[in-house]
Length: 192
Image (cartoon, rainbow, N blue to C red):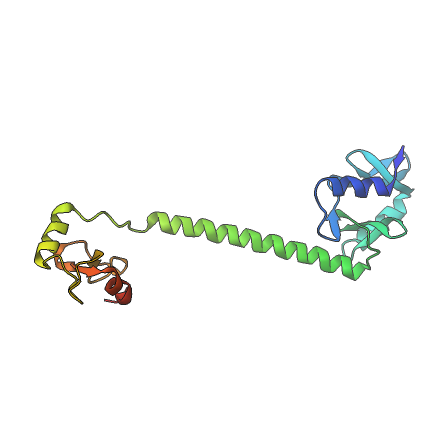
């Protein structure tokens, strides 16, 4: 039994493909039944059958540009580079090609982003981690700086600051630490 095109488009839409004007038909293929060839989706035959000669012409043409293989008014199924696409907007072959290439670009960008994120995770995993400053070192720095900000003399909201920033290779030793208030520490930023 040959199915209808509307059913194929509804099945594609039910899978959640509603945003783009062009949707890939999952499990679409050309199958031979007797002496005729049909477009099939998941075993269901769609549209009219073609002769072997017509299928050879379709297969050559679809390598160059999208070819509408089934259509009923505005809705069509296209074949391009051995994949089937459904649309309901009466698109031209150039429009279908543009949408397919845009889909491919998005997929490449997504893959590139995933690879970059993975590379970032690997880099972060290999990066040195800041260890907690020991209590002995904190006590020594606090006593040396009299428990006051070395920049303004405040004793409110004090913090331990690396003179040479940890990110630039500074150690967490008493010689490289100083007491600063939060305001002066923010003002200093990551400058040596």
